[in-house]
Length: 179
Image 1: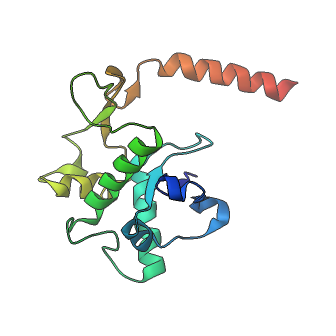
Image 2: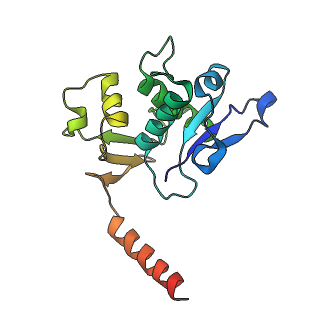
């Protein structure tokens, strides 16, 4: 199961703020209040068991709906779309955690994805509705391609070295199981 990490902004006066893992039993944090007071969040898996940005953002939104008993909990006066607020918040928190500003520009090592324009979850969507379709509208992967440090490593949803990585994994797992 994927995990969601909340990381407070690492400002000098707040360096000791904690990291929480929602699936590990730490509970649901009040994301709108925390983010409203300068906190940041990011998504990821410390176990690498399931890596799915849309899954993790959807889980964050649904946990807020349950805890706060309302919809659109992550929306702000500046961002009416909860999914846009989730996406932008994860980008900002992730960039901060990695010590960089993030973005696309000259001299930056680009990490980005493209979405499958043929996915039914994105049919007829534009603007922030594309994020709605990706994060909340599909049980199937919508990510088509992935670039990391400017290199394309996933095409049509498949990692370029996927088969060799899977073979190494199977071989090592079998070695552990037979020891």
